[in-house]
Length: 307
Ligand code: ADP
Image (tube, rainbow, N blue to C red; front, top):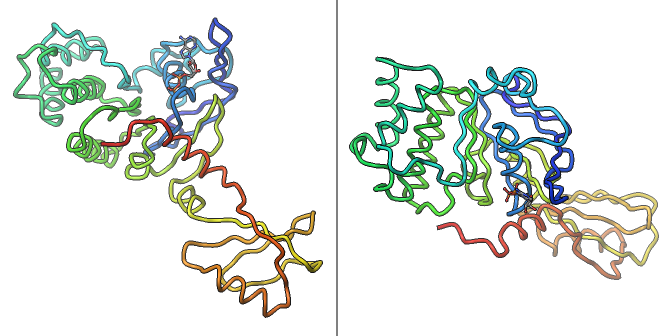
């Protein structure tokens, strides 16, 4: 079952800003999925559309098979959202914040009480249940938003930059809790611009930049590709096929240059020794631009460093 299926989703804001340029995403039930991208990439817009707070310009969104255009209530019942901005009623008590949300989903009486206690305890806010939300620290407010998003026990939980501005200790404990509920069956999607966060938590990852998905793969595959270097060698001899080299992958390009892929454990000296043995002479060498690496540089540039 697909927890989330997005097809050709686009959004152009009234000012002409094209925030999403036709994205496709597919998230399997049970997955822990990261939507990673720099500021302005379109992550919040995508989440706004999924949670029906933002009108899409085109495309389709289905949550557990429920189309948000034709079956919105059923789609919403499957979904819990933790937005990026703190959007709590700060004068409401912690307990009532979660109880009211339960009521919004038609959960009342004993069940509501049980759920409120369960999630406030899980997010270590039970002792603060009678305090106004405004008295909580930033990290606690974020945890309260998670408790609020979970009280109707959604099958899909989406968190928009859940740990932005949260200190390292709270970040780690939030990660542990998210892992726990994912293992218990909740599908989780989070947006982040911290690679470390995506790396630590997520099995699958999509990278979004300027309104387009530029990568969509297993986290392990992305990391493997990130640590792979490709060199382009200009040769003095003309080759008709790529040479077989131990520990390196090779490809002969149409322009006669040789691409050599180097893993993290192999050495350039070894590459040159093998080429020498085969009588292949290298005139010059350059690094092939690694698109993923560029992407990650962009993610890191000008961003606050993870705490
Ligand atoms: P992210 O969450 O990845 O930082 P956003 O979805 O917030 O990205 O923004 C994507 C693009 O859409 C940005 O260029 C942003 O300036 C623009 N944008 C976001 N909200 C609005 C809006 N209400 N009106 C016009 N442009 C917007």
